[in-house]
Image 1 (tube, helix red, strand yellow):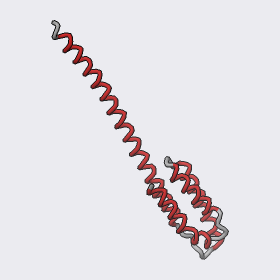
Image 2 (cartoon, one colour; image 1 turned 45 degrees about the horizontal axis):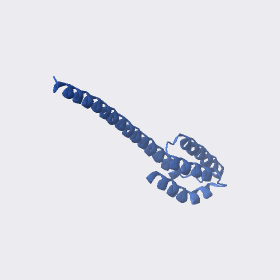
Image 3 (cartoon, helix red, strand yellow; image 1 turned 180 degrees about the vertical axis):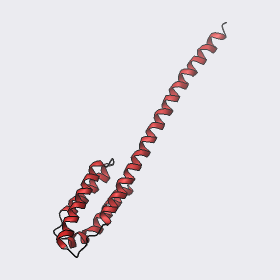
Image 4 (cartoon, one colour; image 1 turned 90 degrees about the vertical axis):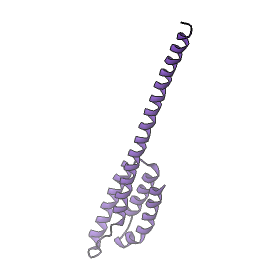
Length: 125
């Protein structure tokens, strides 16, 4: 009987420790799943942003091109608001501001390379 009590105590301790280890493993797995989910959201936001930034207005109608450019800027603002990553969000907000502040579609074409580079850098980080 004297040997049985320590074995029972040891078994109980291992059971509790095993339970804690199981909970830790479950929490760790959940954290990793959340990180993967955020990565997918970040990747989607980046892909959508690059698609918006890659757009080039039709210069045959300058007024319509300017309106379309400002509409794309609004789409970028919405995308920035939904971005789970602060660095990407900031880059998208800057890109939307730059795109929304163009005075002509030609200005947008000139700014595009710089804005694409900024967003790409934020997305890579």
